[in-house]
Image 1 (cartoon, one colour):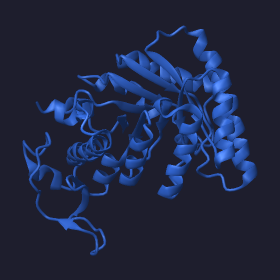
Image 2 (tube, rainbow, N blue to C red):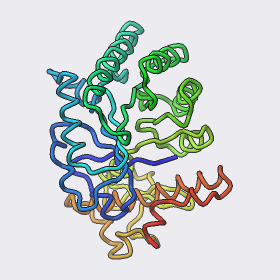
Image 3 (cartoon, rainbow, N blue to C red):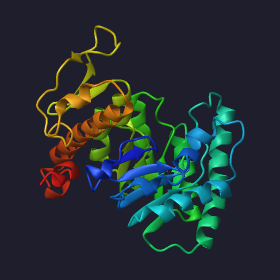
Image 4 (tube, one colour):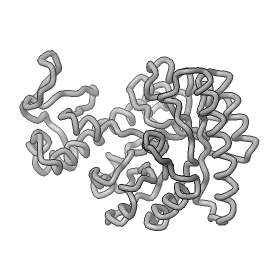
Length: 309
């Protein structure tokens, strides 16, 4: 099981600290040309369509425009393993049954058109299309997955989970794995500790997270063993929130240089350092779960820890 760090143009260059860090990058206007920033480019990459962003805009790009934006990122990437995600219709803002059904149908139509476009280019085997399962209950998830399988997709992602309670997220991930096989499923944006336990138990192929960066932006720092979160004492968080005014012992790439840096609220460069620190500890927490579930399999050794040796 792999942990992809969700990355955008203004985020830390995680592979500079963790060379084996897989990334998910969305084909958004602000991300155009940004893969050139990386001195050490990610070897494993998911190039998302950016649908959560696009559906909020007054004018949406065409499927071909999104595909071309993905190709631009791909050309600059140099990755040895790439998955391209088709243009889907998220259900996060859909409240009626009718709207949810329409979103599912539009997702499947786009998936069909995307696969035709993908096949024209004759990509090598290291580049694969990913079909997105958009559903709102067991029956709709099964239907969505079945239709994608019929189209010929072999890699799948499940989306629109973020607004749901973690028990419902786990349930829906389970429905998807029953249909497509856990070894073929990526889970978009779900990284709570209970969800990680469930995904490892299910044998899900991969998941992605913005959590280290989002927490850093809101003045939070992670520590592991046990995993816990603190607000910087200089932040305006509620007084009941756990706070820290000084760093705890840590061997992340930032703290071994200057641990005080992660406690500086601004400018943004320190937020980036804080996100690197947070990734290190979330990765350790994830890796500990993997080792616990898999009986200490050597393959479960964290990329974070590998990069430190």
